[in-house]
Image 1 (tube, rainbow, N blue to C red):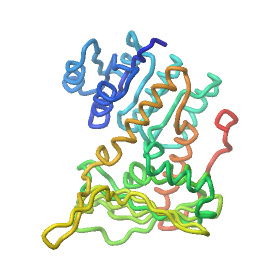
Image 2 (image 1 turned 90 degrees about the vertical axis):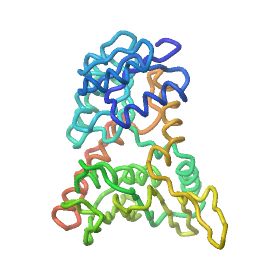
Image 3 (image 1 turned 45 degrees about the vertical axis):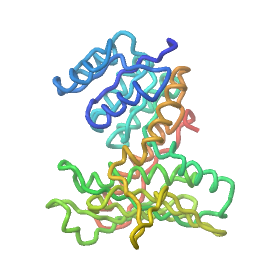
Length: 337
């Protein structure tokens, strides 16, 4: 590895372009040396704004480009597995945006590729683990500050959903964050999923089952409820309340400043996840760059990506059947213990 980590960014849409900007402005010790996107005009525009960056429409070509020492994958989920495997063939560290793969079978293939290498190189972009509020809640739970956890009450709201969003994506692309956060906060696996679907909001596009309530049961006997509401209309909110035997703790209220004026009080509600979790994305990327420079993983690994995919699969089945569905989880390989 060089003193400045050369990164190939795969996918230059909203998330990928944000990572390119972040690497250039807020993360030291790294620089983008190659970008890839099937949209040739867009990838050239992104590359053209930087010095010495090669543009590609083929992810494999970007990964093989001169100077690439690590790979950041921000392409759509179905394209992740192929790009990850290309990177692992070259033994390059990977930061892959969630989901690791759309299904647990693909994640198993990624873990098998790492097993053959004998080391973990893949980190999954569950950025909430790097958020300061989530870190404080994790510390509180780990130290027994509120006793044994009984419930997590979670709310995940977006002002509106993009045009391509589907009912399945409420679980596989949105609730998956709560899945990983719950596993991490509680130190437990999720064993069963139930999905309740109330009457859709009038603000939801035709055919989109929004909102939903997702109930997660864990191996330690806790229950997690997740309200997912992606067309709430007023802003972006992610909140979590942990209830234990000796107390409770809540994060995500977003009340950094409350204004009182002219007989009213209130504050701003952020409109986008890139604003709410800007610091978490920065911290995630800094820690990944530092670890990748030494060939290590500094956050959720391929097993965490696999477990999230397995829970999402059970969640999708539960949503379609309307019944409680067990999570089928393989035995955890020794490499990830």
